[in-house]
Image (cartoon, rainbow, N blue to C red):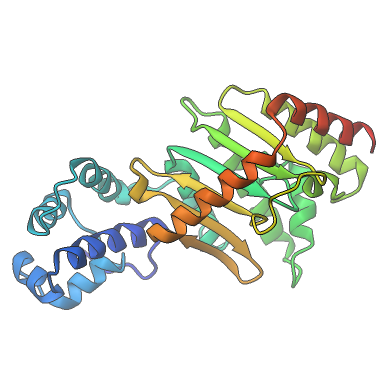
Length: 284
């Protein structure tokens, strides 16, 4: 099996989980290499996501590491078996940055999604005009072909909301994001109306955190929390000026669950949130 020139975030995650299992068992990469009849360098490549692993090898490793969590191992096998299949996002590789493709893959495989947004409407809830306006503010400015590719990619990401058996999606959105007029009223009003429409779908919950809410200082972190098939495979994705970051260490996951829960306490309920969004839209 050839080495990958670049591993996706999901491939890296599978390797990282195998490394966690090995280290928890107190087994060295050299001992693992002996089991597999290979060299330690290849074990390192597997654990870095640069080299795939078959189901048979993965189950051998789980047994060798004395991992008795059958649900976790089955989930890792599913990840391993899916690595040869390309998702729709791969058509954008080479045009749209790899981390943005990783976000689409994360959403595609998530059992559930939760997001906090402070200044923007969540990506998969955005209209095409809103998305184009947001990407138009990129620094440095994007070439026209890349800007349009990013817009098209984001529109395809929204398919996760409409597919058969979509994951439950819970949104906490700050009032600031509703009042930011990207593109002015002609762009913002249809965007808010679209957000309202989506909030009526049975698997979607949209709740507003108004300016008047108290008690959420320190909870204003924009983030996407993707639930895996088991909690150990949850992932947090955050954006920054430097790009996309994925977190999956247990302390990070626990922290962001608390951040979300704390903010949810001060958010309006779904009905009042719809009325609030409607009021903001009508005032434009």
